[in-house]
Length: 359
Image (cartoon, rainbow, N blue to C red; front, side):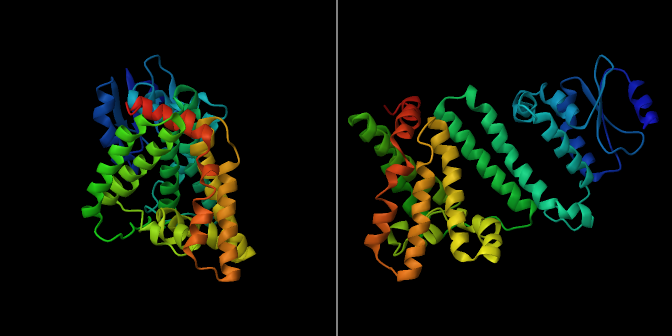
């Protein structure tokens, strides 16, 4: 290692060294080299194999691994998500551990843990979960710098990215789109109707009502409109004849497909399907706290209570064989004000609509 350090410090200027014997490292070095070269950083292979990349700065300091990543991220404006954890308590510790994990497993096949030793495989799932939570940590760090509605969207994207990472690293299939007749033909009318509600009807109503109409318009535009063209996740929810069918097969079909292998199956094997059902709904409630209550700065517990009620309704259906649409809408729509509580509508939704010129 001393010889490697000597070779690096003998170079002039800023130089990033990578392991030339690692195909993963070479691939990313080739992609990043033009970007770094424009910023005065030369990219070269290390003279001998190394467990981490090394960066020689202009003042002769040698940085390795995650420290080098953060240093370079400060030179590239769009790489701010990589440097943000460095400003958070314990953030660099997380980044360094993450870098070391990637370095140890960089020759693994994508989406598989087959190249891990038995000792490493034992903690593989736990480490995967840690990395799945990293986008959420970054999103939390951005909260002081964003308006409530901006933080809501950042957190939504972070949760999506975290779930996608965990599914990918565990070799699980990404949720398949839902089939809803001919989504292409139905999407345009929904987008038009949503646009009219969001930018037209809402401005004629009192603030709280305007927020609700705006939310309905946004759902029509995004969930039933734009996403129906690319990746449908809705499957005619109005046709649901049970609460279980509504949440499990018709509304946001991506979530139950992710929750089954990640939450439901592990819990049901140990505690049974009843407890597994409640855990899935409680997990959904906690996720909604992150994108609803946290941006609003209040109303904590209401989204979780709403989904706890949904889980209880599913268990009631199983016991009493309830299969009635009136029961579905009593449970799903009746307490919906718990989910989208007034603080969220006033502080997040209305401010978002004002920023979009809808109010």
